[in-house]
Length: 132
Image (cartoon, rainbow, N blue to C red; front, side, top):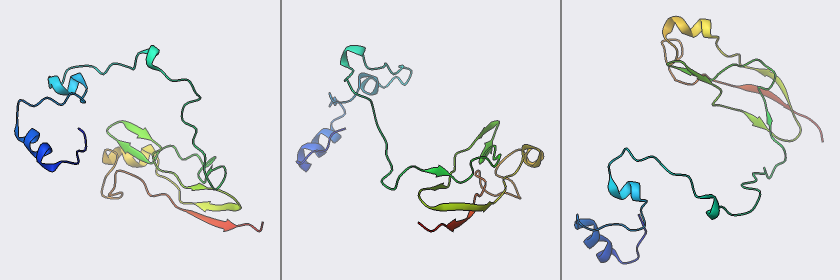
């Protein structure tokens, strides 16, 4: 796929089933769907530290850290923490909304269920802003 400035050219190519987009990966052009993705050859790697993510507000802290929350998503045998409340700066966590246990959810088959209508558990915290 490539953005084109010329609408007529893009429309003409889109209507031509024989047109081959040379910018698309070979797997996408062949269309068999069974091709495995190949990693970039090592000779094509670029030097550097990779992606460095930094928060403009400083280091982030997980408000649920140390609370024992085992998961926020529990579907068909998959359990993981997918939802976070992150704080930065002068905040203190006063209390957190407790999560559900596997024993609570297993009889219902996991999430969603009549007691928890989403495939994610709700999370919430009460925070106190500390003086600087």
